[in-house]
Length: 108
Length: 117
Image 1 (cartoon, rainbow over the protein chains, first blue to last red):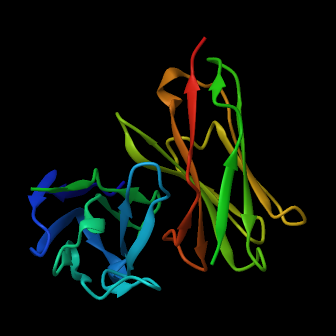
Image 2: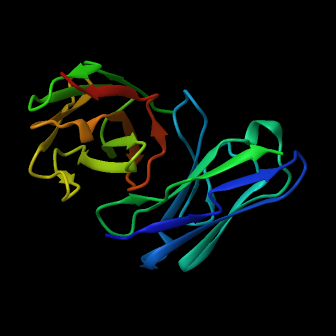
Image 3: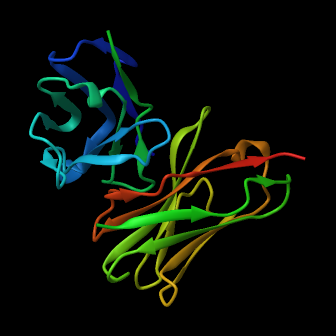
Protein backbone atom coordinates (compact mmCIF):
# COMPACT_ATOMS: atom_id res chain seq x y z
CA UNK A 1 0.00 0.00 0.00
CA UNK A 2 1.07 3.56 -0.60
CA UNK A 3 2.34 5.41 2.46
CA UNK A 4 1.80 9.16 2.62
CA UNK A 5 4.15 11.17 4.82
CA UNK A 6 3.10 14.67 5.78
CA UNK A 7 5.43 17.35 7.08
CA UNK A 8 5.72 19.13 9.31
CA UNK A 9 3.72 17.40 12.01
CA UNK A 10 2.84 20.75 13.56
CA UNK A 11 3.09 24.19 11.98
CA UNK A 12 2.86 27.29 14.19
CA UNK A 13 2.03 30.47 12.29
CA UNK A 14 0.21 33.75 12.75
CA UNK A 15 -2.87 35.00 10.89
CA UNK A 16 -1.86 36.67 7.65
CA UNK A 17 1.18 34.44 7.15
CA UNK A 18 1.66 31.86 4.41
CA UNK A 19 1.42 28.15 5.20
CA UNK A 20 3.11 25.44 3.17
CA UNK A 21 2.20 21.82 3.94
CA UNK A 22 3.92 18.86 2.33
CA UNK A 23 2.73 15.37 1.44
CA UNK A 24 5.14 12.77 0.06
CA UNK A 25 4.02 9.44 -1.40
CA UNK A 26 6.02 6.23 -1.17
CA UNK A 27 5.61 5.83 -4.93
CA UNK A 28 4.34 7.93 -7.79
CA UNK A 29 0.62 8.63 -8.03
CA UNK A 30 -0.97 8.27 -11.44
CA UNK A 31 -2.96 11.17 -12.81
CA UNK A 32 -2.17 13.27 -9.72
CA UNK A 33 -4.86 11.47 -7.73
CA UNK A 34 -4.30 13.30 -4.47
CA UNK A 35 -6.79 15.14 -2.27
CA UNK A 36 -6.47 17.46 0.72
CA UNK A 37 -8.91 17.75 3.63
CA UNK A 38 -9.34 20.15 6.54
CA UNK A 39 -10.53 18.75 9.87
CA UNK A 40 -11.63 20.72 12.89
CA UNK A 41 -12.52 19.09 16.24
CA UNK A 42 -16.08 17.86 16.40
CA UNK A 43 -16.74 18.60 12.74
CA UNK A 44 -16.89 16.54 9.60
CA UNK A 45 -13.70 16.65 7.56
CA UNK A 46 -13.97 19.00 4.59
CA UNK A 47 -12.64 18.41 1.09
CA UNK A 48 -10.37 21.26 -0.02
CA UNK A 49 -8.53 20.00 -3.10
CA UNK A 50 -8.84 17.08 -5.50
CA UNK A 51 -6.59 15.95 -8.36
CA UNK A 52 -3.71 17.70 -6.61
CA UNK A 53 -4.78 21.23 -7.60
CA UNK A 54 -8.56 21.45 -8.14
CA UNK A 55 -10.30 23.46 -5.44
CA UNK A 56 -13.58 22.01 -4.24
CA UNK A 57 -16.77 24.00 -4.52
CA UNK A 58 -16.84 26.96 -2.15
CA UNK A 59 -13.19 26.72 -1.09
CA UNK A 60 -11.52 30.16 -1.00
CA UNK A 61 -8.76 30.85 -3.51
CA UNK A 62 -6.21 31.36 -0.73
CA UNK A 63 -6.04 27.53 -0.72
CA UNK A 64 -4.01 26.05 -3.55
CA UNK A 65 -2.53 22.64 -4.28
CA UNK A 66 0.37 21.61 -6.46
CA UNK A 67 2.68 18.73 -7.19
CA UNK A 68 2.89 15.47 -9.12
CA UNK A 69 4.51 12.08 -8.83
CA UNK A 70 5.50 11.69 -5.21
CA UNK A 71 5.64 15.27 -3.90
CA UNK A 72 2.59 17.42 -3.28
CA UNK A 73 2.01 20.72 -1.51
CA UNK A 74 -0.96 22.53 -0.01
CA UNK A 75 -0.44 26.27 0.29
CA UNK A 76 -2.60 28.71 2.22
CA UNK A 77 -1.55 32.13 1.01
CA UNK A 78 -2.79 34.32 3.89
CA UNK A 79 -3.95 32.51 6.98
CA UNK A 80 -7.24 33.45 8.55
CA UNK A 81 -8.24 32.38 12.06
CA UNK A 82 -10.70 29.78 10.72
CA UNK A 83 -7.87 28.03 8.84
CA UNK A 84 -6.25 26.68 12.00
CA UNK A 85 -7.06 22.98 11.93
CA UNK A 86 -5.58 19.61 11.02
CA UNK A 87 -4.91 18.93 7.33
CA UNK A 88 -4.74 15.50 5.72
CA UNK A 89 -3.70 14.35 2.28
CA UNK A 90 -5.21 11.24 0.68
CA UNK A 91 -4.21 9.28 -2.40
CA UNK A 92 -6.78 7.61 -4.60
CA UNK A 93 -4.52 6.30 -7.33
CA UNK A 94 -4.35 2.81 -5.86
CA UNK A 95 -6.45 0.82 -3.47
CA UNK A 96 -6.36 0.68 -0.58
CA UNK A 97 -6.82 4.43 -0.47
CA UNK A 98 -4.55 5.87 2.18
CA UNK A 99 -4.18 9.06 4.19
CA UNK A 100 -1.24 10.94 5.59
CA UNK A 101 -0.91 11.25 9.35
CA UNK A 102 -1.88 14.92 9.28
CA UNK A 103 -0.34 18.34 9.82
CA UNK A 104 -1.69 20.39 12.71
CA UNK A 105 -1.77 24.08 11.85
CA UNK A 106 -1.83 26.04 15.09
CA UNK A 107 -1.87 29.72 15.99
CA UNK A 108 1.52 31.06 17.03
CA UNK B 1 -24.76 19.10 -1.45
CA UNK B 2 -24.84 15.74 0.33
CA UNK B 3 -25.55 15.32 4.04
CA UNK B 4 -24.58 12.12 5.84
CA UNK B 5 -25.36 10.94 9.35
CA UNK B 6 -23.94 7.88 11.07
CA UNK B 7 -25.93 5.88 13.61
CA UNK B 8 -25.21 2.82 15.69
CA UNK B 9 -24.00 1.62 19.09
CA UNK B 10 -21.26 3.47 20.90
CA UNK B 11 -20.10 0.42 22.83
CA UNK B 12 -19.59 -3.10 21.52
CA UNK B 13 -18.06 -6.14 23.18
CA UNK B 14 -14.95 -7.92 21.90
CA UNK B 15 -15.61 -10.73 19.41
CA UNK B 16 -19.02 -9.25 18.54
CA UNK B 17 -20.13 -7.58 15.31
CA UNK B 18 -20.37 -3.82 14.80
CA UNK B 19 -23.29 -2.59 12.70
CA UNK B 20 -23.41 1.04 11.64
CA UNK B 21 -25.79 2.81 9.29
CA UNK B 22 -25.29 5.97 7.30
CA UNK B 23 -28.39 7.89 6.26
CA UNK B 24 -27.89 10.11 3.24
CA UNK B 25 -29.71 13.27 2.20
CA UNK B 26 -29.24 13.56 -1.54
CA UNK B 27 -31.49 13.86 -4.57
CA UNK B 28 -30.32 10.59 -6.04
CA UNK B 29 -28.13 7.90 -4.53
CA UNK B 30 -26.85 6.90 -7.94
CA UNK B 31 -23.49 7.93 -9.41
CA UNK B 32 -21.90 7.97 -5.95
CA UNK B 33 -19.31 5.87 -4.17
CA UNK B 34 -20.41 5.41 -0.55
CA UNK B 35 -17.51 4.86 1.84
CA UNK B 36 -16.67 4.06 5.43
CA UNK B 37 -13.52 5.49 7.02
CA UNK B 38 -12.31 5.25 10.59
CA UNK B 39 -9.88 7.21 12.71
CA UNK B 40 -8.04 6.04 15.80
CA UNK B 41 -5.06 7.52 17.62
CA UNK B 42 -2.85 4.59 16.76
CA UNK B 43 -3.81 4.08 13.12
CA UNK B 44 -4.81 7.57 11.94
CA UNK B 45 -7.37 7.73 9.13
CA UNK B 46 -8.06 4.35 7.56
CA UNK B 47 -10.27 3.70 4.55
CA UNK B 48 -12.46 0.67 5.27
CA UNK B 49 -14.18 0.32 1.92
CA UNK B 50 -16.89 1.58 -0.37
CA UNK B 51 -19.97 0.42 -2.18
CA UNK B 52 -20.81 1.85 -5.56
CA UNK B 53 -24.40 2.81 -6.34
CA UNK B 54 -24.75 -0.34 -8.46
CA UNK B 55 -23.95 -2.44 -5.40
CA UNK B 56 -20.32 -3.30 -6.18
CA UNK B 57 -18.13 -3.20 -3.05
CA UNK B 58 -14.40 -2.65 -2.66
CA UNK B 59 -12.71 -3.29 0.68
CA UNK B 60 -9.39 -2.53 2.28
CA UNK B 61 -7.47 -5.84 2.15
CA UNK B 62 -6.48 -5.38 5.79
CA UNK B 63 -10.15 -5.65 6.80
CA UNK B 64 -11.67 -7.57 3.90
CA UNK B 65 -12.12 -10.83 5.80
CA UNK B 66 -14.23 -9.11 8.48
CA UNK B 67 -16.16 -6.36 6.69
CA UNK B 68 -19.36 -6.09 4.67
CA UNK B 69 -20.78 -2.86 3.23
CA UNK B 70 -24.31 -2.89 1.87
CA UNK B 71 -26.64 -0.37 0.25
CA UNK B 72 -30.39 0.17 0.61
CA UNK B 73 -31.32 2.56 -2.18
CA UNK B 74 -34.99 2.76 -1.17
CA UNK B 75 -34.06 4.06 2.28
CA UNK B 76 -31.05 6.05 1.04
CA UNK B 77 -28.88 4.26 3.57
CA UNK B 78 -25.70 2.24 3.48
CA UNK B 79 -24.35 0.07 6.26
CA UNK B 80 -21.14 -1.29 7.69
CA UNK B 81 -20.80 -4.66 9.38
CA UNK B 82 -17.45 -5.45 11.00
CA UNK B 83 -17.14 -8.75 12.84
CA UNK B 84 -14.71 -10.35 15.29
CA UNK B 85 -14.08 -7.05 17.01
CA UNK B 86 -11.05 -6.34 19.17
CA UNK B 87 -9.92 -3.28 21.09
CA UNK B 88 -7.96 -2.25 18.00
CA UNK B 89 -11.27 -1.53 16.26
CA UNK B 90 -12.04 1.26 18.73
CA UNK B 91 -12.25 4.39 16.59
CA UNK B 92 -14.39 7.20 15.27
CA UNK B 93 -16.22 5.83 12.25
CA UNK B 94 -17.14 8.17 9.40
CA UNK B 95 -19.31 7.65 6.38
CA UNK B 96 -18.47 9.66 3.28
CA UNK B 97 -19.54 10.17 -0.33
CA UNK B 98 -17.67 10.45 -3.59
CA UNK B 99 -19.52 11.64 -6.70
CA UNK B 100 -18.14 9.33 -9.39
CA UNK B 101 -14.86 9.74 -7.56
CA UNK B 102 -12.55 7.95 -5.20
CA UNK B 103 -11.95 10.97 -3.01
CA UNK B 104 -14.48 12.01 -0.39
CA UNK B 105 -16.44 15.13 -1.16
CA UNK B 106 -18.74 14.99 1.87
CA UNK B 107 -18.38 13.35 5.27
CA UNK B 108 -20.59 12.65 8.24
CA UNK B 109 -19.65 14.01 11.64
CA UNK B 110 -18.47 10.59 12.78
CA UNK B 111 -19.53 8.27 15.58
CA UNK B 112 -17.25 6.97 18.32
CA UNK B 113 -17.28 3.20 18.72
CA UNK B 114 -15.56 1.66 21.73
CA UNK B 115 -14.82 -2.05 21.87
CA UNK B 116 -14.74 -3.11 25.49
CA UNK B 117 -16.27 -5.49 27.98
